[in-house]
Length: 354
Image (cartoon, rainbow, N blue to C red; front, top):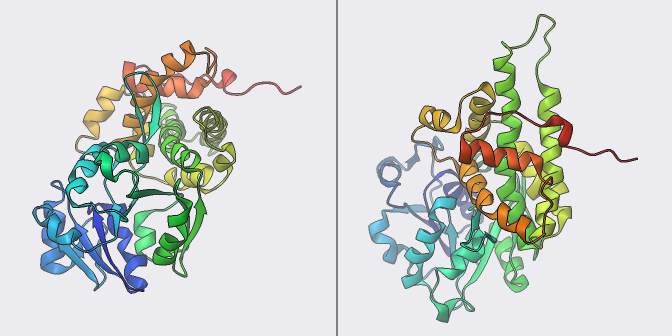
């Protein structure tokens, strides 16, 4: 059955979801946020997305945010395409137009710390922004796994999880989105999936430190030695710590060894803002200096690390973690919140197993 689906947020990942949807015959209404005006202008004038560098599929109709009421009229499924800094905004923006039975599926990745020091997954943060009378009647799902937007739009083979506490909505969502190149696996472990995809941003920054450390050494030596060894150690330490945090927050640690954890981290380490920020920090810049050099770019890795830094002291006070646990994550917190140097505690990243 063909449907009208709205995507709110015309960034890379949100817009890329239009390809599997339109390949399945659905009509997509692409709504830009207040930050997406130039993108929507290009899409309306030329049907061309300037950041994806692709023409949109024929069945995509772009809308400015001013016309969101028209765009959401009659749709049953809304894709939340905003980043982690926009999750409160998207909840408040969608709320006047939601009706019982509608579904929201989010590409957003991150965690948020409460005033009490708890860490919350973003689908729960989004749900809290909805009218209380609708929270039980509008189902929320999330997408997690290794997915570069440009590759999805290029119809490259991609495997992800769709996760929700509402198991009843997941088969229908899979049927709507799955294609011969977009492979979807279902999970009710929304905490495990969401914690993994949030933490991979933090731990990818850690892997990026190794590239900066190599630059600080002057680059490869005369025999060509680079810095894959420390990068791999940081990758492995991140996976280990990720599993501990998933367990602490109530998810299944097995997700770390699957698509949302090391799978997503691997593809994120292939390049992009997070690795670049790690490289600058590893090279010796403070976070304040690196942020200046990357002015204008959204640094979601830094945001999630800052959120975790707010929660770690409370977790320690409650006895949930020991003072010497999570050494890599604690380093990342110091880098981002204290402008500390990138002195990696390699001797403390792992423990003897004898």
